Amino acid sequence: MGTNKKNVSQIVETAQILTLLGAGATKKPDLNRALRVSERLVCADSGADTALKWGYKPDLVIGDLDSVDRDRLRREGIPEIQVLDQETTDFEKCLGLLEAKTIIAVGFTGKRLDHQLAAFNALVKYPRKQVLLIGDVDLCFVCPTTLALDLPVGERVSIFPMADCRCKSRGLEWPLAGLDMQPNGQIGTSNRVCQPNVRITVQAGHPICILPKRNLKRVMAALTGGQVNG
Image (cartoon, rainbow, N blue to C red; front, side):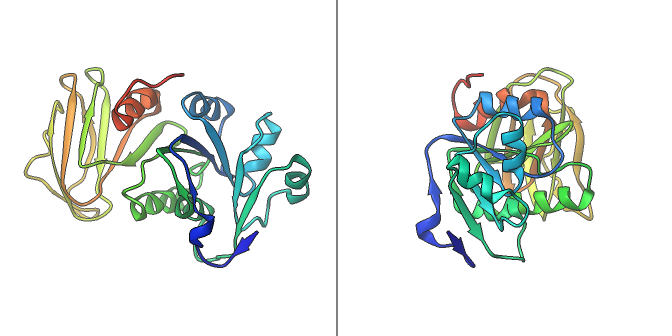
């Protein structure tokens, strides 16, 4: 099926946790880590080729489908949604069509800085969707209004403003309260945990929280409000 614009009838809704695999450079262990805590695999365009190469069959493929092996998708019986829109990235196309409990996105950062910036831009365009973006070293997500994380003392925590924002914090070495943060002004990178049970409250804006990716299960537990398997 194809569309030039988002069609309500094409929106994929699920109460499950999804892994979303992109076509960017990624490592199989990162995909495995995401799949251990999710129930379904959706691919963005030729991310499907990567999944099939590594032995995983996607539940769905979304994108402009200009680089994926569509003949193989048909042979494998993998459904697809084609979005003929040259103004958005495949990541943004997927976020526009997916409604899930949580989306764990892998393969959307890679080595190119412009791709990483585009991925961050897509995150803040959909701040109400719970999306975790996993990169080579870190994971990041739009910080919810209240975030309570159980992290080890000394762990790195960064809060980056994609636009004007204000936050307050507990458990960070350098408190966020009273800071008017903005991309061309005050930022909150390279902070550190000084006591367990970190709490961040967002008072205005939609900042991105960045942590080492070893904290995936901790972040998932905090965002989903329960214990995470895997």
